[in-house]
Image (cartoon, rainbow, N blue to C red; front, side, top):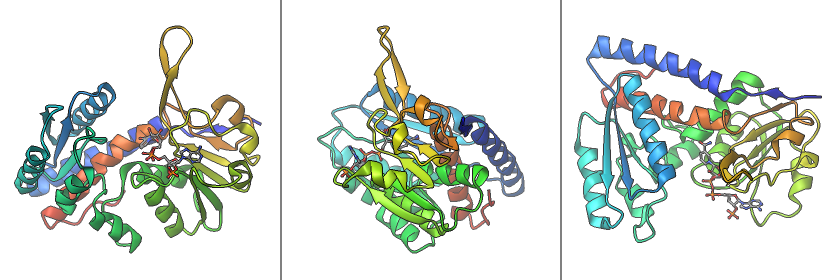
Length: 294
Ligand code: NAP
């Protein structure tokens, strides 16, 4: 058996078109241009690429895009001042502080300073709490992207056994809550879980967000299961170059799974587009307009 490849790039392109159309409609009807600000402290090359791509996508969709580049030695006070200035800027509807921050800065107090209405990564306690209560309108981008892929490729997941490996605030926890809200039977695993392969073999849908290259082996996968690989790991390609791999050992896994996301071109492709979706939703909410449903 060869798995269906879950084409995140194609799904992301379709969603992007819908967002572009809705943005045009909302701008024409209400004179609102969604605005996204990205804040990057320091010059980590991977973070620079992510932030640049976010800015480019925002511009291509007709959003206002602002980038704030801060020195690696920036103080906590200077960063908080920048966040507060963006909170107060009416032309900015979404603020993304690229994480991780340099070690001398405290992420928690930066997230606490962010206006929850502009928290398009949905990392503030307010948005995490609203998700827990089933009332979120801004949902973490990568979990939101995964839910869209499952909707497209699986349909109804009610009653399915889902294993989420990883319990981060950014992915694992919000993903588990969204899956639960969709009536799946959700198990969460992490570095202290016992017998991960046995837990994985029970799953109809296996979601890996670990950050360990190819940790999930083919013989962990229930034949025909849907495998969602969130991991993005840069490894040595053996020819002096590097390449990206996921948390799942893709080639052998794709011979056992029913459907699988590749890395790259799977989940990652959805994340930036879901960020744009959140920015548009935030712009509507901040202007008292009903947000489009995607
Ligand atoms: P994270 O904060 O480092 O969390 C990793 C999670 O994996 C933790 O809960 C950890 O358990 C668990 N873990 C680590 N080693 C394990 C092991 N051997 N067995 C079982 N569980 C283990 O990472 P994250 O931010 O959630 O990201 C995870 C991966 O997804 C990374 O590769 C990241 O680059 C990628 N990612 C991709 C996107 C995208 O757009 N596609 C977005 C976000 C993240 P403990 O809690 O016990 O430490």
